[in-house]
Image (cartoon, rainbow, N blue to C red):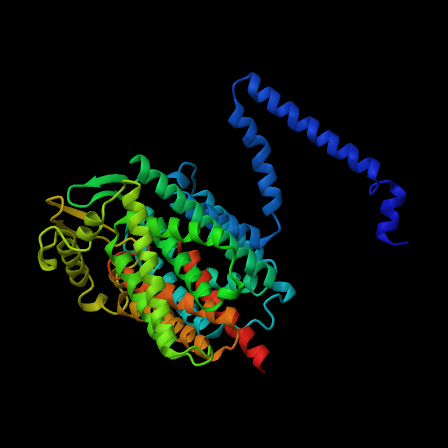
Length: 483
């Protein structure tokens, strides 16, 4: 007798029992909510009901766990995420860190079933494996040198998340999971951008402050994730416009994310986005599969880009958040000369301190995680000792030496080249759009990381690995379909 037959005989699958279970569940929910309201603990009551429900939904689904992680990271700031922390030795774990560990665990317990069979990791897999090996060495060297454990722990979390490339490759190989992941990223970035706009309109909230020369600025790291999602979305729309979502959804998404980039007033990010779009425009001129005249491509793409930028600037000005003059002023600098600009000077001094710290025997492998530099910060007029450096390349050099920098650059430059090759080669417009979007996002990250620790110190490492895993999945699919 089959299992369904046994369930039917036992009454466990009857409509009557299902109704009773539903009724019992509603009664329990009602009692919890009534009790919480009577005792003035409404939010505690909601937590009692919501948290187990969320955990139940996430428990055995890697893609749901991943989606929840990126949703939390993009929408919430690091301060909000840090409101609840668990200390595991010298490593502090936020809720997104705990979920990341669970995501990794779900992948590990799937390996005995050979779930990775037939999924090629590609050159990125080998390069990331080398980088992870260097991470282990850097952690050991930092610990042996007596560096501050908390600093070591922060770097283990952000650098170590490069290993997530492998479980992401496993998850994204499923068509439904890949589509769900993209929808969650786009939705989260849109919601995050909307929150940025609200902060700008009211001129208050976490990270909001005013500069004398350029007005309101929102100084959080979320715009780096917004920029990646916006560029990936732009690439998808550019090459697969016929299968686009409704315009009523496209415009708000792009406007909120674009506005957030402007309100961040981050010049490295602005420069990265412009370089990415310019590179994509040039790349698109050499794609021969679209059968669109070169002149038409140039005119249409430039017109759309210019119109989009004008629309964002006009919207920000119309809402009274920033004027066009404020935005233009931020593209310059306070002193009128980049060589004497205080933020540029601070970076140059810190980079010089890094070079001094790794000179000699430390040049090849660095000083390990948690290492610090001491230098004069002209913007505050004080000498400070810090473990973070405003550049992923110099941060990596401090921890892992020139070897680490070369491997880090190899990971992303190799991915840029492979994304461009896939864009040229594929006849699938959707895949071409994805390849173009990934190409743009990686260009932006590489540029922005020259002036901030985007690739190394930020919590968004899992999103950067999502880009690399998505690219490899699309390359694998292209090879299978063209065989």
